[in-house]
Length: 120
Image (cartoon, rainbow, N blue to C red):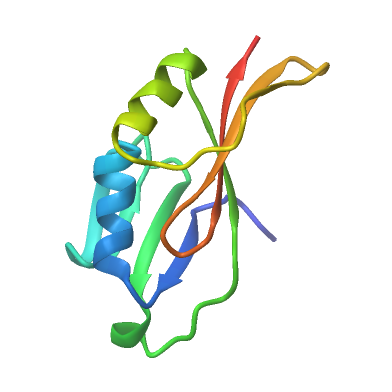
């Protein structure tokens, strides 16, 4: 039946801007592109591992599917928070949870939630 997990798709009406957000603001590497640099752009950290893929709604003739929540990891959350604030990004207050994570939340330009976690 199911043998693997490929990617999470985001269909955006502002794909170019969203791609720039993940590339320049969050500094997530581009693994590959299916179409061009504004459609079918895969972000990730390891080749052949699950990715986040951004698609242009108009090119694909698809409506946005709603909001997603993505969790990314960092080695030093305080440093990451400082870097994001320098880029003008609005963040929640960082919270230390009893289960061992230190987290901050923000939204991308489409309203998707991004959680950045440091494991303590």
